[in-house]
Image 1 (cartoon, chains in turn orange, purple):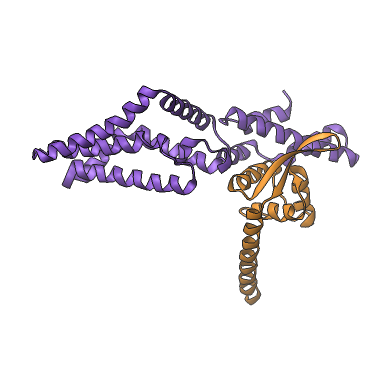
Image 2 (tube, helix red, strand yellow):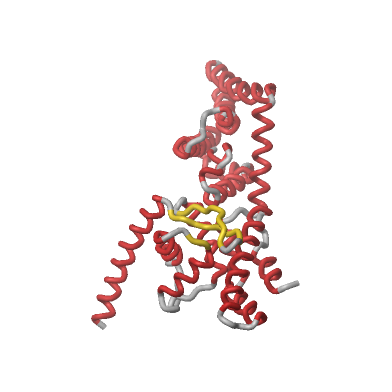
Length: 103
Length: 211
């Protein structure tokens, strides 16, 4: 399924639960959608950097199973952006459902 | 050369050294994690590597997206260059006084010529002095917040357009084209700076990025 434009919101949704590294973020998005939302993982990191540049997430170095990892966590500004995205998405979803429901 | 190496080589094309190192590190971490996860599911090593590579997708698409969010080599070079220019100007006492006094002198001469009813010379000196003041004085002013930077940039471009109007009068449209051609390197640098501002978190902005 095409994820264009929604990936940053999905990333923020994963990070609002707990700080995570790139691979885990990708897996959580895929698992949470029962594999319906599939995307190329090479495009995950540019989206993460964009969110970092905007101040929605911040990165830090951590260790998992003895291996260095770059972790990402959501910032207060990211939480605010996520809240707005959720509202926007719910409105869009309701509007599309109304149209499709009438068809 | 392994497949991951060739993927990375394409993904980091035209990125600055620091950006390329960052991409290499995060993609290597991601690849290792994906490969290990596949191995733990009982997939044979060769297949696990292929699965991890396939999940990364097209490196050219990744490169296009990386170039939108990370510094490219030309942007990093511009940043280095303007850093050293700024250091040179601010650290040299003679340079500092020359850059501060020349616009002032030009504005004073403009007033003198106006008093002598030589408005044509006076207008040119006013425009030239104002432009020099706008471009050379700011490194010495306390512009180190986003709001001040925005105010300065609005003033800068307003004065630039005002300068064109003062010098060319009713033929300002032609003058604007001429000025655009003459100042093209400056416009290009401004555009690059705008790109850099979008890519760097504010905490990492060097002083001249506010200007």
